[in-house]
Image (cartoon, rainbow, N blue to C red; front, side, top):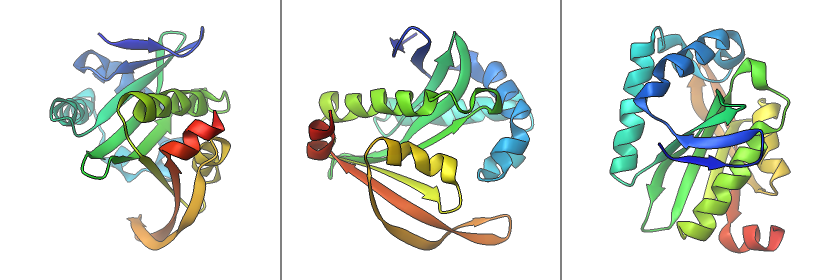
Length: 182
């Protein structure tokens, strides 16, 4: 099992089938918190549903078309960060993430993303990382803002969320900007 230590409290590990029950339980305990912005929670009813997500994530990883890691806080899964797909021709990716309700406000997502973005730019040779967040999702938007991403615009009615269209704010970071921020 691949585990990368971020600091003494925090590690990142490649998602694995063995994580299904713990990850499901975290999402189940965090249902109300996650439901506001992530409709997939309504379709996650058991560890088997989480296993399907893990299977798809591992297939994308095997195809070199994505990377999903669990955020471990004191050895417990606290959330997930996901390179949703790699566009190798243009050397870019987009990012998704979520944090369990019990772990909010500790800076875990920011620290995890910083570490993964270092890896993406330095080791993977990517040139661009994009993050989209619902305009009203201030917590999610805080991650790219704290990490120095550039707000590039708003995609109007980007997602249908519970019968309402939601605008997404688009943030981008280029490899040269990331290097100069360090």
